Image (cartoon, rainbow, N blue to C red; front, side, top):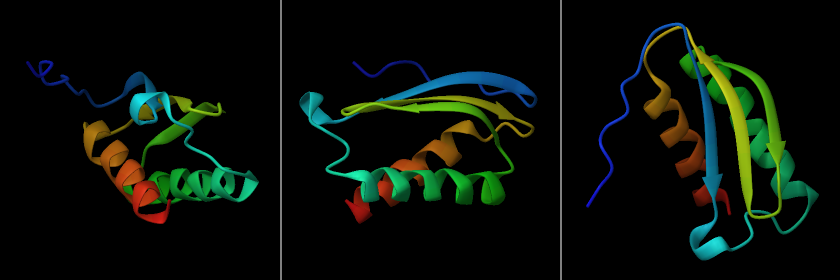
Length: 87
């Protein structure tokens, strides 16, 4: 059963976490980490989100995001799909 849809608000803060499939690594090296950070930066411009802090771990990442517009799911989807296509 799928989880309920997240209610999104303008001006909200969200803790976002993303893990690799079956706990697999998201990064094979520093270049992969740099690429994900590049996508974070592009999402800031494209979706006008504010990334207050982030933590890149081997098999997952954490973000603290503020959304001036209720578009969190669009921004995170774009980041994850872009990184998956790169990876």
